[in-house]
View 1 (cartoon, rainbow, N blue to C red):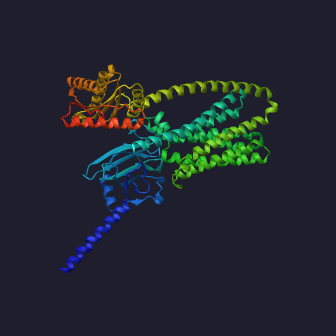
View 2: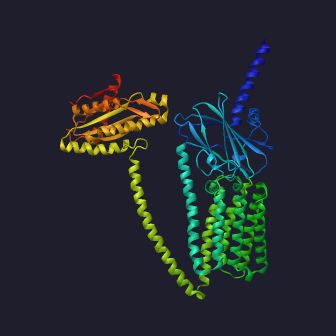
View 3: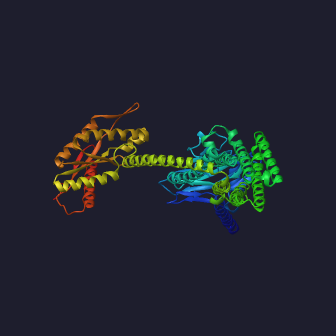
Length: 612
C-alpha cells in the first residue's frame, strides 16, 4: 500500500512538471489590463511542415507533444522555405473591456495564411488571408494581412497560424486593440506618405528639368524613381491593395518584374550620368550586359515560379548595385567630380538594399531599420542623386547658360504655381479644420451635441442666468428598459431607437430653446433657459407623454419607447460661486431626480427639491 501511494505521488508530480513545462514551452501570452499592442514573436512556437500536408488536428497533437519549437532568437524570419510553417501560442485575455483584437501579419507578400482559434469548449474558428485571396476578403482594408480575433475574458484560447508562401517566410505577428491599430496604421501611413511624397517631389522637380534640358540623365533618373517606387509599392502591399486586388498572378509576378524594371533604370541612369561610353568602355559594355540580363530575366519571371524568380532577382539587385559602385569609383579616379556625390548616393542605397536582402533570406531579424532599410536608403540615395544631377548640371553651366536661364524661369513659374496651390490647399485645410471641430462636438450616432460641448455651453447659460437673475432648469432623460430592446431586437435596432428618441426629444424641446445633448448610452440631458422648476416639470411631462404616445418603427418592428425624467432648477442667486461647482451640483441633483423617477416605476417625471 505504501509503495502504491509513493507511485501515485510520483505520477502526480511528473504530471505537474510536464504541465508546467508545457505552459512554459508553449509560451502562454496573457493580455493584461492596459495592454493595447503586443508582438507575438516572444511567445510563438513553430513547426515546419515540410510537405505542407498536415492539418489542424495533426499539428494540435504535435503541439501537445511539445514538437513545436520557440522562434530562433525571437526572430520570425526564416528566409525562402518550402512547405508550410505552423505557429502556435496560447492567449489569455485579461482585459474585460477589450474582447475583440486584430491580428496583423506585418509582412505583405505571404501567399496564404490560415488562422485557427480553438476555444476551451472545443469550438474552432477559421479565417484565411494572403495575396492569393482577393483583397476584399480581408477583415479590414489594410496592406498587411489581418484577422479579427474574439478573445473571451480569462478563457485560454489556442491560436494556430499556418503560412505557406513562395515569398520569404517572414511572419511578424502582432495583436492590436482597435484603437491601438488605428493609431499604428495612421503613423505607418504617414511614414509611407512622406516617403512617396519625397519621391513625387523629386519626380516633379526632375521632370521639369528634363523637359527643359532634354538631358537623357534626367529621363533615366525619372525612370529609376518611378520603377523603384513601384518596387516598394509592391513590397509594402500597396500594389495588392490598390492596383491588382483580385489577381494572385500579378501579386506574385509584380515583385520580380518591378525589381527588373528598377534595375534597368538604375543601370541606364549610371551609364548616362557617368558617361561610361567615353570614360570607361569596358564598364559601359558590362552595364549593357546587365541591362540585357534584367530584360531577359524580367520576361522569364512571368513564367518562372515565384520561389525561383524572386530570390534570383533579390540577389541580382545586390550584384547590380555593387557593380554600379565599382563603376562610380573608376569614374571618380578618372577625375569626374560629380561622381563623388553619386558614389555616396549608391553607398546609402547599397546599405539599405543589403539590409533588405539579408532580411528576405532570414539573415537579420525584422526591426524598424531592416524592415524600412530600403525606404531609408533609397530616399537618401534619390535625394543625393538629385543633388548629383544638380552638381553635374552646374559643371556644364558655362556651356549652357541660355538653357539654365530658361530652366530657372520655368522653375520659378512652377514654384509660384505650387505656392498658389499651397495657399489654396491651406485655405481648404482651414475649412476642413472648422468642419472637423464642429463634427467633434457632435455625437456620431444621434447627431446631438456631445457631453463635452454641453458642459461648455452650459457654463455660458449659467453665467447668463446669474447676470440676468433668470431661472435655468435641467432635464435628465433616460430611456426605460433600453437594454431589453438591445437584447431582444439587436444593437442595430437599438441604435435606430436611440436616433428616433433623440429626434423626438429635440423636436419636443425645440420651442423652449433647449440645449440638448446625449449624456451617454441611452441617457440625454437638456438645459431649459428661462424655465423655473414648475414650468420645466410641465415641459418634461409633455415630453414623456409624446414619447409614450408614439412607437419607434424599425423594419417590421414597432417598439414602444418610454422615458424617466429628472428635473432640477439651478441655484443662480449666488454670483460669487464657482461655475464648475454650480454645474456639477446641478447635474448631480438632476441625476438624483432621475433615479427617483426610476425608483417610482419608471415612465414618470420627478423634480428635485428647490434650493433652500
